[in-house]
Image (cartoon, rainbow, N blue to C red; front, side, top):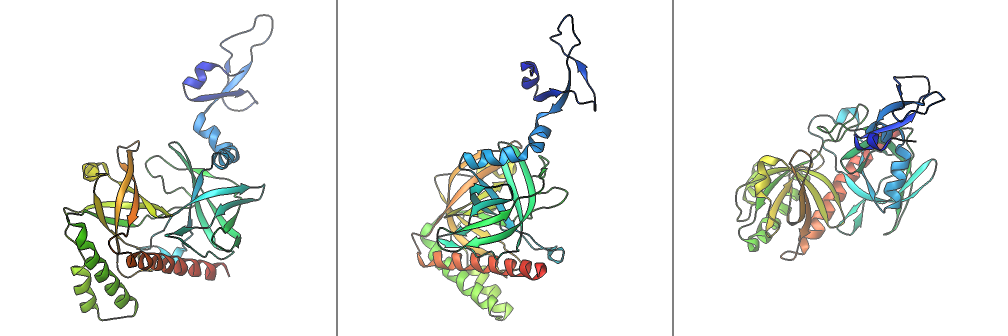
Length: 320
């Protein structure tokens, strides 16, 4: 029986199995040998019982973070777009999740594509590598991922990398909007510059358009794009800029999705919730806003699809 004091100290007491360091049972029982037990850190125990943690995520209606796995040749400026997807089912060999998507569009991820996956419970986070076994098309489609042989716990100071896999989060420039009505012109300019760059237009003209694609804004501050899904995104903002986060105003965002997109993708959004993490950085949930320029919604969705298709195609070629 586990000692309640051990639980308070964050350790798990298990029966001594002839390895490691043992100690006499503090309760003691006269007339017989005291039970010997091994003290194991609770986070290590959770890692060893990762299947139970995964089932807990599933039973609570939770999700995983998944990204198409980059290849060795994609080092440098390449970034990973991470999708937050709900777990729909589990078996001994497979994990069923909803298909990644944003702004009403699902992203195609072909079978055989390697995936980098992360699972979080509280402040504990684990990562593992998987692959797409098959997918179900349609607006309510799903991805079937291969069950990994094991997972690895992320260090608290580097929650997106372990020894076998890692994620490189896109960088985001954030400005508080001073005049929301000025976003429509800036969004149209962003569309023109992006399309010109994708078609191989002259760099000088593209740079001129891109430089002008900024509405009336306040001081800029940086963030990282943690994940996307549905009609919004998750951002991580360093504690040095925590004071810039205000849930009552709109923001202008530039998301860098290199090298698949040659220019930053710009959009408007609102911080709908935020909290401090264990290092006092701000984790913020953002809802995209297209009320002032509804046509920009399709453009943003199109570019996200373009990015994902190019990364998935590269992954499929490596797997072939």
